[in-house]
Amino acid sequence: MRIGKLYLLACIPVLCLGCGSRNDRPAPSANGADALALAPNPGAADPARKPDAVLLFLGNSLSAGAGVDPAHAFPALVQQRMDSLGWNAQAINAGLSGETSAGGLRRIDWYLERHAVDVLVLELGGNDGLRGIPVDVTARNLRAIMDKARRANPDMEIILAGMQIPPNLGQEYAQAFRNVYPALAAGERVRLIPFLLEGVGGVDSLMQADGIHPNEAGHRIVAEHVWAALQPVMEKWRFRE
Image (tube, rainbow, N blue to C red):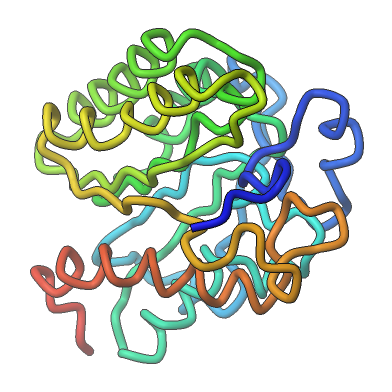
């Protein structure tokens, strides 16, 4: 598969200044002091009705839907799929442009305290790789996020979104980074999406002009990757009305 230049689902530090588009959802600070309550994703079921299950998408600019209408970002598309099946489930989009694994580790407590999360889709680490953060640090942060999630709900299902980076920092580092995700998934016994941008990254017709973020068509493919991992998890609850 061709790895295009900086097509990864995260922004490099300089581009992060422009990644927080008006379409991105506001995210709480690490301590939650100025946090905003998140509205359900576009197309979500009646917010007044308590959901049978809550999905948390903890990620960076890809989850946030940078550059596209939030209703066309993959977390909202997953919500629309669940709605179409009559499942009483809510997807919470905790994507934040420019986020790192360390930032996600600081932020997750705010969401876990306010929501009874049943499924965590963990989409972080891309910015770590682009910044050359040691892979053992990224792995440690991702593992700590999963540990926090399980302490909040021992029965929580976790889906880890695998990522890749271009070899700008050397082939050895790029390969070590790529290996973090399958190793974590095996060690933590969580479901793995091998590469979230499979078939999207590096394909001009599926990417925005920045070469970093998927366009609406690309998000539809990403949503299918997520759904393939998520559906068997959700079927256990059988959320049919």
